Structure formats: structure tokens, C-alpha cells
Length: 403
Ligand SMILES: *Cc1c(COP(=O)(O)O)cnc(C)c1O
Image (cartoon, rainbow, N blue to C red; front, side):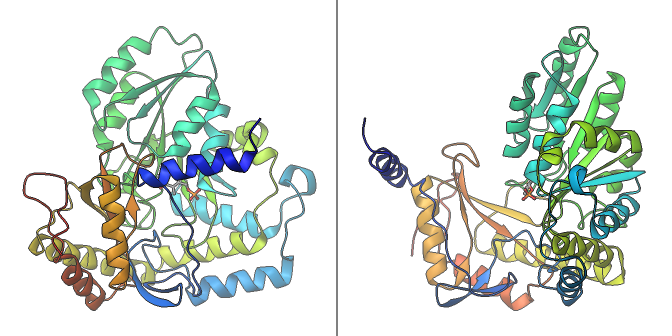
């Protein structure tokens, strides 16, 4: 049998040939609009820290205080050794923020999905997901053992056909629809109002991933469900504490019964050490910032920067497709080309990641520009200027690297 490293090195070489190899890069500064990476200062258009809270003094201070008062570690699973006060406080703040009876935090958004979906549906049931949901929902839907169906992206006719077919075949009558409110790699929005009407018509449950909407959408920045006026009709709202909220971890918000049930059935909650007190305290502070006047001001700045960036990109010959969020995908097409474009931009002082298979489909590689309230107009203009050198070919998603 060949040695493990021989086998793996071959596979890595294949990935590299296909433009699909990924590597970590060391950052020697906090996350923010500018980062210090490998000895250079880069303008950062890669993070999901939409409101610029990741290094906010209120969150940093809350994490330090919680560490001093409750320690660095949380000891065990909460069912084993009890729940530390910062976790309770974060959950209370979350439920109040989301307007639900209760909430539960997990160590990540990924592990939230992995715990929740298999707790809600199993082999006798159906789980129906949008084609473009995040990997965590795909993995969790598979793990659940439920009959898995995929509907075309945001296509409610397709979803209805699947619902018609599944209704009557679901032995226990359980059909779970899983979708995202803001899609992570395209930045477009789910048609939430008609989607909710449809799931009500068929008596299905809806689990909504608000990872990229929480903190950004809605008059209280609760998410797209708030903006669409459908929060109270969504059975399971979930997301991450690591994006606009500025900390780390995942959450579910919903009824008291849902949360009590998940405490008993979500395996990634039950069999995992609770997040550290610092993370929970930072999340609570982040939620407070999002809800307050500063959150409102930061969200307004974010949307202003998004509008400026769209103008810059438009005049540089790039159109960020159907985006209606702070995620602006610049379609390139080829994996190797996208990586090359990202590398050249890094050379010019900009961190803009190339998104490739398996994050998106093959041949749909792109640069993913994300904006933050912490960016300045100067940051935006500088990127616009840099990227105008690389013009996409007209009528094709392939960027010709003119420069
Ligand atoms: C980031 C993300 C997650 C996972 O959240 P983490 O806290 O990073 O694990 C889930 N869903 C979507 C759409 C995401 O973008």
C-alpha cells in the first residue's frame, strides 16, 4: 500500500493543475477593512464582517471581561456541566433580537445545521433544499437520511411541484424546506413572501439560513425575514454569530418547544463542548451593537458603500449580476483565471478571494467582493480603479486578463 503522503500529494497536485488548490495565508492583524498579510498591508474585500464589528472595542471588552469572570474554556457540553452565564445572556439577547420565544447557540453555523436538520427529519421524511444553499445545509440534509430533493435556485414553481409530489408520500407528514435568505456566493435574495405562502399551503416547515442577512436587512436589522414581514411564520430561523454580529458561533431562534427539543436531539449540541465564554459574550455585545443606534448607522454606511462599489464596478466594465446585498460576485468562469485575477489584485494590494468549485459549480468561478461598513469611500474607489484594468469580455462570463 502506498504511503498516505504519496497518495495525498498526488491529489493535491491534481487540484493545483485544475486551479482548485487552496492554501492558508497568515494574517498578523485583526480582521478589518485593512489586514496585514504576509508582511503586506492589504485592503480587505473578503470578509463577512459586514458591520465592521469583529474588532469593535465593545466586543473585545466583553470577551475580555467574560474571560476574566468565567475563564477561557467552558469545560464540557452544557448538558454535562451546566450552562455558563454568558451563554444564557447571549441566547436571551438573541431571542429578543429575533423576536422569538427562545434561541440556542452552537459553536458554529455549520454545526448548527448539522445538529438541527437531522434532529427534525429522518428517513421517513422529506427535506427539500434550494440548489444554492450553503454546504452545511447540504451536508446536514444528507446526514439526516431524509429523502432529499433539490429545487432550482429560487424557483417556486419547481418547489411547488416537489411539494405536490412529496405531500402524501411523507409517512409522518414531515416536509422540511431549507433555504437561504441572502445567497452566500451570488448575493441575491430568496423570494421570502411567496415562499412562505407556498410552504403554508402545503403544511411544510421552513428553515431559513439568515447568515448573510442578519445585521444587514430589516428595520431592526433582524434579517430578511423581518424585511419581508414573515418572521413569525418561519418555523426555524438560523444563522451565524460570525458575520455581521462580529463574533463566532451559530444560532437557532424559534419557539420554546423547538429549542427544548433541540437540546435533547441536536447531536452537534449535545456531544460538543460549549463555545468559550469569550465567544458568547462577544456575540451578545455584537447583538447589542447591531440593535442600537450605532448598528443603524453602520448598516446605512454599509449600503452606501455597496452602492458606491456597484457604480465603480459598473464603470470598470464589471456587472455584479443579480446581487442585492453586500456580496458582489464578479463572474470569471475558469478556475485558473479566477485564481490568477485574485493573485494579481493581491499584488496590487487588494484581498479579493477567488471562489471556485466545490463552493460554486465548475466553470462558474468568480471573484467575491464583500463590503463592510468599515470600508471608506477611498477603499472602494481604489478597488474600482485597480479592477478596471482587468476587463471582462463582453457577453461572456470569462474575464480576459487584459493587463
Ligand atoms: C458562513 C455560513 C454558514 C456557516 O456559519 P459558520 O458560523 O461560519 O460555521 C452557514 N450558512 C451560510 C449561508 C454561510 O454563509
